Image (cartoon, rainbow, N blue to C red):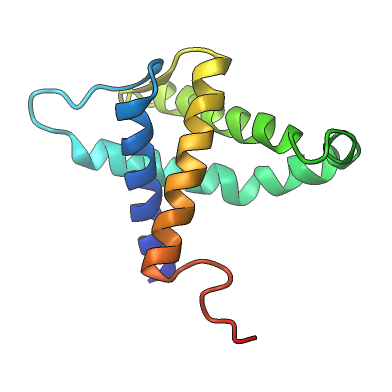
Length: 129
């Protein structure tokens, strides 16, 4: 159940990013194609689940030297990879360049964090001090 909720949170965060950031585009088409958008959110979640931790470990020295700012670059690369996979599968999601991916990843991170906090699915949601 947590995976479904996290996919819906990713979809909402990606939707906000598509609406706010120029360069992030999704073609909803005439029929709405919301199921394609949910597939894009699922791809985004899978990329972040499996590839992002590996990249975080491999880039740990540069992340430490930049005081964590390099994590923004990793997030942008994950969004660009999601756009590339989505374009290959003809899902209608496109990322137009690194700057759009960087701004989009910031929006996705903030909206995803806020939604996870409100819904209570964050890592810290069940912890008691």
